[in-house]
Amino acid sequence: MKKVYIIHPFQGKEENRKKIDQICRAVANMGFLPVSPVHAFGFLRDEVPEERKLALKLCQELIKGCDQAWVFGDWEKSEGCKIEIQAAEETGVPVVDMGLLLAKLEEFKRW
View 1: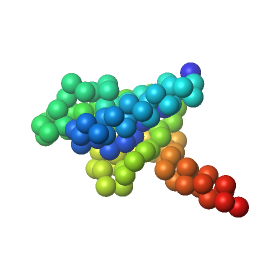
View 2: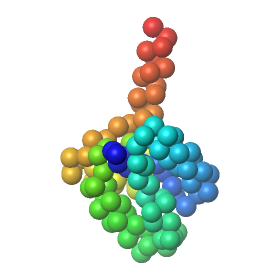
View 3: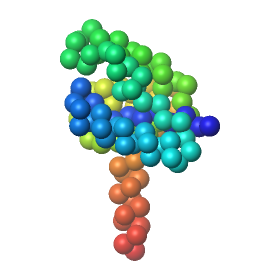
View 4: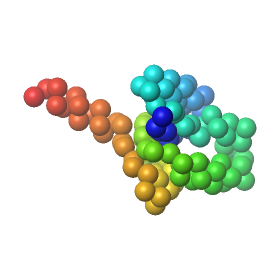
C-alpha cells in the first residue's frame, strides 16, 4: 500500500484538525495509507516552542518513508508546511499540490 504524507496547516487549531481528519479519511478510502503528522505527534504541543521544534524535526524524518506528499489548504502561509515540502523535495519524495490539481480539474471541466 502506498503511503501518502499529508501536509496541511495546523497551528494547534481544532478546525484544522477536523479538516485533516476528513482528508485522511478520503485518502484511506482511495486505497492509500495516510501518514498524518498531526495525528502521529498530537502528544506534542504546538504552542510550546521546544515541542513544536521537535515535532517539525520528527516530521522531516517521517516524510522520508512515504511514497508521496500531498499538500492541502493554505500551506503558503505555514512555516511548518514549507519545512515539510522542503524535506520531501530534498529526499526525493514527490510533492503534489492538491489545491492546484483540483483547480486544474475544475478548469478542465469548463472546456
